[in-house]
Length: 558
Image (cartoon, rainbow, N blue to C red; front, side, top):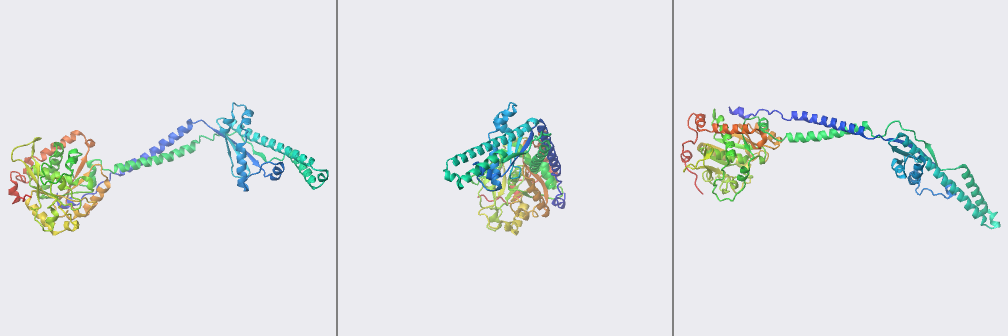
């Protein structure tokens, strides 16, 4: 595979267009289901019928004042309307209505069926009755208004009669002289007016419109409820579709990473408590003892990645590998660390370089001293060898068993970021000193693995992509696809020599167990000594050669 081909990741096909279609289907389905449910529920409800009768009030203030009846306490048409509404609602005619209808009704049932409102005109009050019987609804509305008018007339006539009697008593109490004077004349005129108003029936309320028997139910409103159900279903469907789309935009399978980046899938690292435990910080004692030993399942995953990398050595040499990721939590440092340790256990002479000068974690994970490190080597304070520390990576495994043969231990050379952290990490990553350091390491080691900051957090990794033989991308299962798509665009613009992508933190359920077993079998085959030898036309790098012979000279102990 040529560098130009690897540097241009092909456009990843969209995984979200089918999701949009499924989202539209969810919206339509929810709208149809909720609308159908609303329709069915409305059909099952008991039908209710509403009949309304109207009362009109006259502003007979003079007559009411003469009769001594109460007047509205508030001024204006609104105040008069409020007074009329209160009067109709508080009138004690519900019991009379129930007795007049004789349908087994009670005053409470009549009040529950009635609704007194003002439809708009200041002197009109509407009494609406709603029941399951259309005839009974009209009867309640008409009887209530009739009883109300009858009661108001009775009260009015009684008030006029009482007012006439008071005027006559007052007239009889006057002296003979005053009785024929102005005071007596006023009382006689008032009494005569009251008798006239009483005979004429000068009432302040009349029935303006009697209730008719309704022809159609007022509830349930099937059409309205169905439309409302459809609207609610649309909103519900939009919510479900949005949730599914957000869920779909998370990376669920390694194949999604392959499609996003448009590069081969190098391997799948399972979600592992052992990897989490080994990634925890430890006290820095400088020993690096057994800090990279993995269980068999996790080690086989890294053996598979290493085996896949052999295929890229057909027409070029892979000595320097850059490990990048889109987000800081993708597990980039974990993959770089254990990939380097796996190669070291296989017999290669490997250097692991921590080029993350902003948030270094490697020294704490491997129980190494934080300094000296890469930052000191870049400013010329010490050499690459002086900045290197050794980590014991344990024994190479054979046929699934750990070999304890004396002298079979393997070590990994590590250059940590160093302390104190520089104020200008970006400039150091672009410096000639780093290029010279990488060239020196490339000529000495079989493999140099470089850990870098996440692309979303820093652009430091981009200054290294053209200085290495290959770039490995790490993606986390369960992460969002947006950062990965942005990282793909960044790497494409930088013409990075991309090799492949590693899916990190894969759960057990992402594929069948038989396929996982096949992957592990492939890993054993790809990392066998025969393949190592044939991949380079001879002996594998580091195989049968002592590390001291490959390095030229051993790093100085600290």
